[in-house]
Length: 471
Ligand code: HAM
Image (cartoon, rainbow, N blue to C red; front, top):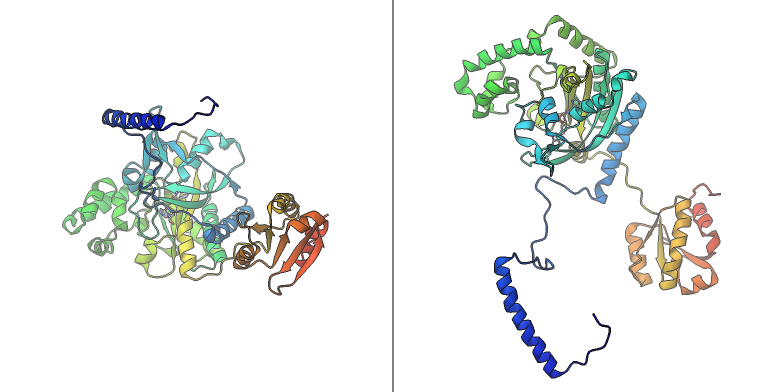
């Protein structure tokens, strides 16, 4: 565009209007062939949160921090190292690890083709990725067991309902490279300790699935029991009968529940080695005073388990508790090998963070509050705002958080915000103070103000808050 000024005459305006009209007609014609460019989105429906997904807002962070800090402390106490694996993995990893016929793989995975045509999946759980990482990084050469803990989002396209989200968080502990039943007991103890720390009453439900061979013999018996009662099964269980018979024991349907009581029990089919392993796990738990409930119907929804399996249920009615399971885990001795590694026994668990939060809320448990700034900074005028930044840095160095409302000009409005935030003191910096190098401290409760040299302000506040004095 030329920077020269144009003289706008009436004629010029008319011509412009005409050309605008002409352009409009031309545009309409073009719109028929080319999709119209989106306008500035005014009036368009605002983007919505996806179903089953949630925002985690600052007001809820105290719950998140509390759970995270407790998990991290347990990890430190038991010497589990933090691991983070990618959220996206090859689809095949989960199909192989979790199992082709499981609900997760059949119905719940977010699977996409990326631009190179590779099938990738948003992780529905983390154990598969951790076993993969163990192989990828040749961790078999490290002292065994290798112990990990993790925290992060998982994705399952389930029907959203209370306690069931499509993006949810888990933290988990996994120990790879050792087959001792004591390690199973340690894993269960850590999960139990977590809920003890939270002050939440739970039960540890425990069972053994034995080896694939003993399980196969049990499955045959189970199928023959249910086949002769097929007519009484729900439609889902009729399908499960062929594809995933163990899940028959897990069905919520009334009729199926009735049949379950007379069904064969897996403990009776365990081979001697599995029985022995299970007894030792229970013995170690008894020794450590970790209470548990033997649950012969507990089968879990993932295929990689061998031997010990367990779930953490909130205390209360069994059916409801099962639906709201807070966590689950067990031994998965064949997984690493299934993913191309050397035979590596392993055991672990994961806990659902949202479910713990919901339990904390319903139990009205005490949760440490998020630390709020005790100091509010109020400014009057441009110069004060500019000066503010350097002051903020001084306070940051002394680790004293400051709140502010830079967009507000009036002192009254700023003091109102300071009150709402529950600040103990407000620092007031006006034009005059900028010029003479001072600042006001206002005691919000007493309403008293004092003038302080700007150079001494951090020290003064440290004294008032009883904080250790910075050098
Ligand atoms: P999982 O039983 O599928 O096990 O999940 C563990 C926990 O994650 C559940 O008990 C529940 O609290 C939470 N959870 C699962 N699905 C949802 C959902 N849609 N919405 C909210 N929370 C949910 C596993 O994932 C195994 N990887 C556990 C494991 C670790 N086994 C051995 N090591």
